[in-house]
Structures are given as structure tokens and as C-alpha cells.
Image 1 (spheres, one colour):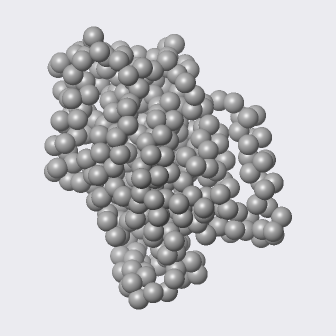
Image 2: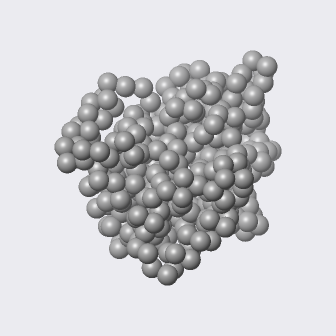
Length: 341
């Protein structure tokens, strides 16, 4: 990639510049919003239990549903903050985020949130926001496939708007370079540590051929340790994802081939071997600019407890990215797909 040229001069300066950019940007940031653990204690005391039971059914029926909900939450928080905007359908008067290039063919799980919302509405009508439901469901999804627990502060409001433009510009992409992705995290008030920890969510879930084709026909053999297992893995990927553009774009492969349905630290161990499926993931370890991120990958590959603790902390931090406007002008949607009329 172009930014890897002249790497001897870049390890320190770009990150300093990025911090400066993040300070200047001053929009949505992970902060301390007016969220509390007991927000629904008197108005909907069973909300956490309802979400938990519904997610248990969904993950039991298909473990991949855990990754779908976790990805939905991430894509929500990086656009206007964690305000449920990603859940909105297009209407005559509102352009949603679902058809943005970074979301189309990538996001699923909307029906799962619909089912949870309907259950909660039958118990506590008009009380619990879709944004909170998605945030709680993401935590439960992680737990149900072996990941860590964390307390989820609640009290978010649902936005009455969405941003197709921000969905296209704020969300990291599979082929993006480390500095560009770091910029996007810093803009949200998230650190290099948060970036590496949250990327560990790729220990579950699948990726489309269109998002890893350039990796497997590009620098995969350069980063890989060339072991028989790695070579067999690459051959398998190429059979799943033909080199010809457009052919097999929607074919999928697990981002963690070792334990695809278990939330653990094997994702980082694959990066150490150079076997990361997505270029953006392998960059965390292999980029000449990633001194800090490389050390964190090594740490989490050898210390699952450290990864779990940081992932939980970073998920709370990401969940605190707020859209100040939604707290003033937001609502609790009756249907997560549409603004209340």
C-alpha cells in the first residue's frame, strides 16, 4: 500500500497527527453520557432477562447469529453514535444506512432485533429504546459463544434520523490501511488499544469473498508463515473465492478458521501466523506502522484473560459513543425500522 513507503520516517509522526485530527474533529466521541445500569429498574425491570432469553434462542438456532448482532451494534455506534439509526428502513422521507456500500450485503440480524423488540413492547410498551436493545443483545451474543460479561449502561434514545453519508465514510473497510482505520477510531474517541481489542470480535463471524479477494490474491503469501496448514488454508480460500471479480462475491468464509463459533483469542494467534483473512485485520500485526498494535496482538494471542478484560472495557466505551441530538430530540421507537408517526 502507498503509505507503507518510507516507513522509517512514519511510525511516530502519523499517530501524533491522527491525535491532532481527532481533537479537531470534535463530533461524536466515546464519553460519559447520561446512561445508568438501573435506568429501567422501575419501568421495565425484566428487560435484560427478556433480551437474554431471546438471544439464547437465536444463538442456539444458529451460532452465527451472535456475530450478526455484534456487527450490527458496531455499525450503529460508528454512525451518529449508538442511537439505533442503523435499524431504520428507507422511506419516502428518510434515507437509511442499510444500503450504504459498507452495509449492503454485510448487515443481517434485523429480524432478530424486531423479535426482541416485539417481546419487550408486549411487556413494557414505549419504554425501552431499540438502541438499548441492540446494545444489550450484543453483550449477550458475546457471552453465549464463550466471551466475557460486562455491565451494559442503558438509557439511550432512538434517533429520528440516519446518515447514509456517514455510514459510507465512518466505517472501516476490509482493505483499508492501518492509519486510515486508526483515524476512524480516534474520531470516535477510541484508542489503538480499543481498535485491536474490538477487532477481536472477528474471532466469530463470516466474511464475503468480495471483502477478502484482494487479500488472498495479494499479500497473503507474504505475511503467512508458509506452513502446510497455512498453504492448505489459502488453497481452500481460493476455491471459495475465485480471482475473477464478481464471481463468487457472496461466497463466505470464517474470519477465524480455527474456532469460528467460539469467542476466544485464536483470532490473534492467526494474525501471528500471518493468516488473517482480512487485510485490515492482518495490518494490525504486519504493518510497518503498527508497533503499538503489533504488541497488543502478541499480548492478546498469549493472554486470553487480558483480551477478554480489554474487549469488555472497549465495548462499554464504544457503547458510550453518543449522539447528543438523540438525547434531546430522540424517542423510543415502537417499531425499530421506522420513526414514530
